[in-house]
Length: 126
Image (cartoon, rainbow, N blue to C red):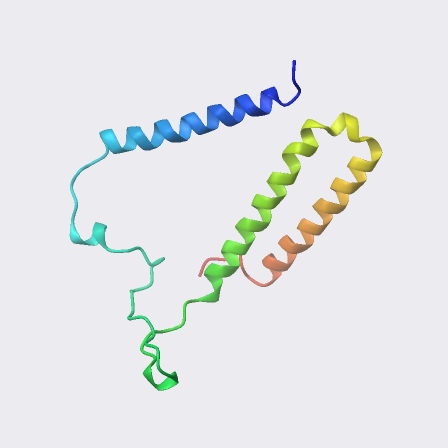
């Protein structure tokens, strides 16, 4: 039996569940649309006109809060961590002590990024 077969089966089950959920939501979901539902979602901030090209005097929009970018970076950090943890978990016995030390250093590195984000207030929602 191939060692990657369980991971492939799990990936196929996850993909099938995602496709099934999207199709099911479209079939049984409510079909009542109103103006508020058709508006683009702006993370709770009222939409403003975009900046007009032509110099600093023509800018009519406002700055987008940096907090959303910090939250996005946090999700990216942990997504990358998961991408590295799955193959390591599959081949843990073959890697030996080197794999354990390498993953410990990787987890330490990600923990430093998490602590930085926490100290900067990226996890508190105002």
